[in-house]
Length: 397
Ligand SMILES: *Cc1c(COP(=O)(O)O)cnc(C)c1O
Image (tube, rainbow, N blue to C red; front, side, top):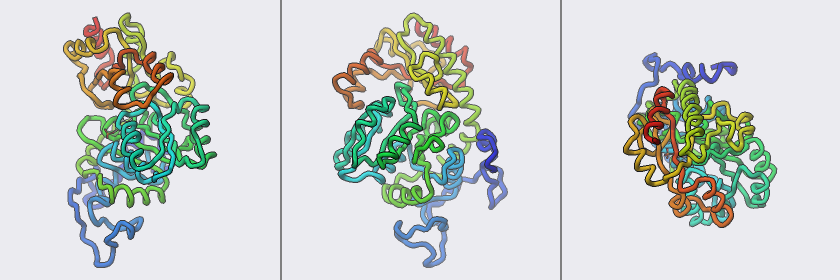
């Protein structure tokens, strides 16, 4: 596609016509071995060439490769590496970039799996981690040190929808000689442009909005060509979490409608957030598309789409969670986000603080003040907004 094509057109027409059959969609090539000339491809990952023929499925395969090129294009990156899940992409990148003695700064509130990976396996391997509030640039400045190799941000963060200023973080990280990685799962390429704002790596859990139909797991890292080649050798070939071609095919199908779905998710989330904000039982609504979001100015500046994920705090906590699960007809009580169906899930504050978020003292107190007994995380789906609102209204009564 030309440089000037809109993202919406690129999402539809960026998928190449299949060169073998002239099919208008990408065939699913399930084979895990490919015929090569003797000596054509080295047996070790260390001998991997950039544009080498397909060799073994874990190294790369045609359907997954088309998806990688599509995702690199949508984020305006040079190349991309797909993984079996979002967590495989995160762990692959972190294990590739960091070694014992290195220091990394990671958002103190983020996807629970990432927080637990950093506090667990990465620290056991000797990587030094500082958990910081990345929306507070002074805190980031104070956390940077000579050995800092990476700043790892998520924006908006799951589950509090706090934002990080990607441009300012890139500037701070680069001045200190560190790289910036941004998990942009919730924003998608249609909401946030991390690479254009200066990030070195952008990650997505493709399981969420990119796939969009709740039927495939996947993850991706997008970045510079040489960096992606090194990541593929080190993290994909050796750690082994390769994406399956059938998942790649489902995610390719999802990408076509991603810009249209993001508009609908945003429209629905805005309607639901405004309804919840007026509801007497609801104490607080966290959604970057609301004027009441504490970083509304940053949201206007960096988010082109506020996405479909919101969180709210309501009187009743656990008991209310049980009531919602029982009474909701349209909205399903289930984890995850970015799917066609609206999903709600209760995240009890004390559980999050015990198992996932490394918050102590003043920071834990601030989180308790924000989240109360717990956060109801609501991923607003593609149903008619007024019917989602009506369902919540009858269940909250
Ligand atoms: C879901 C999620 C992940 C992990 O992705 P999986 O595909 O579930 O492994 C990482 N980051 C964010 C922000 C997520 O929402």
